[in-house]
View (cartoon, rainbow, N blue to C red):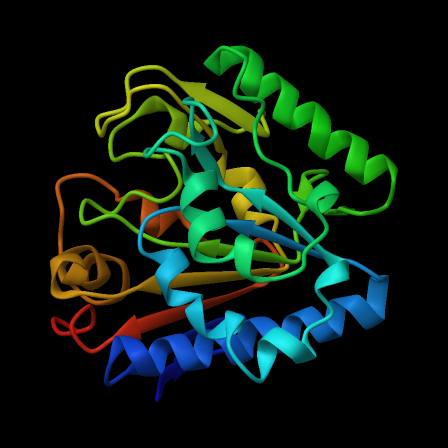
Length: 256
């Protein structure tokens, strides 16, 4: 059920993760149809972790057959600097749980260059995004000049981190770069690349998908009156002009 709604901020709470997944699939499919008609492409940014599991209903009927997968262009909000088929790879997680089960053209799936160093991989990914802006696949925010993805699908860690933007880390304050690299991630593996908050917040639609009691504290801090010693990265997810929708199961929302 929707527990809070404003023009640009919706909080949906579900009795189970299963119900959350059903709703997330409809939300994503509806946006896919809208943008495919509107601009002939649908740019989707994924994260790792439990998010991929929560997308499982998209690879089932009716959506697996009704969505025009040829319009999808898939990106990652962050990636570990490991080989593409390494167990720590967000690409591999998405491939196994989602991409291998839907007919998105392989040329529309933008994994990082796993042959490069963290710094070079970040520069390369930013160049890739700029190229797709030039080709009118990715839109641009008129107000900020940052890339404007159609849908940003975010998970959240138990510490309140999103993407590879961790509590207290200097990268949460990055204002200019589109893609940044990190070599000393507080969570292994240490080397990663990540979109920055200006890119995340320029998105047309952001879904924050959070399930499980282990994440109840940062949800309470972000949406209730809970307190933490630091501003949590999840609290910095605030779209400039787009719409933010929280998808919470009852366990994640248990302290609200």
